[in-house]
Length: 182
Image 1 (cartoon, rainbow, N blue to C red):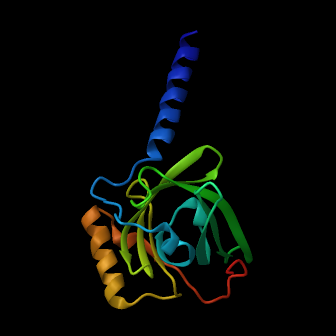
Image 2: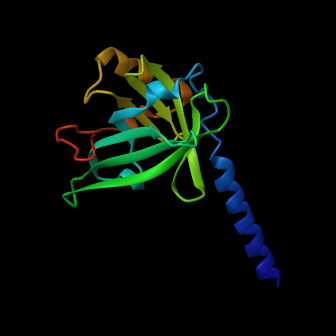
């Protein structure tokens, strides 16, 4: 009986942690305001990221965003797994956590489990710095397969101000045509 109560408390704490993390972002991060989701839609090339298990061994990674009929955002992430020599993709959904003019979203690729997706810097809807739910998730995105050096430096500086250890960034190769790129 005592073990059952402890297990129930641990599961409850775990679920609470999972569901509360969907609305979180690093403490010093601020999502972009006056955000226009329609201008953000389309293809983004991943320029740099922190490595984590869902994108492990991927290069030529892209993210594609489109609107659902219900106003949520369809997400298709894809890339080339250079260790397995094959293209992979994952479909998900992103939802605004609050006002639709604030770039604070939550994204899910696994049913009811969401994680933070926060655009914290945006240059003319051509380049974006995206913070995840905590300091373990960071992406630099571009509409092109490269990024100007001055914007790269600005984004790295912004990420460091937030608290990211930018020495952990992986610079993603963009040397193949991604078959998921429309």
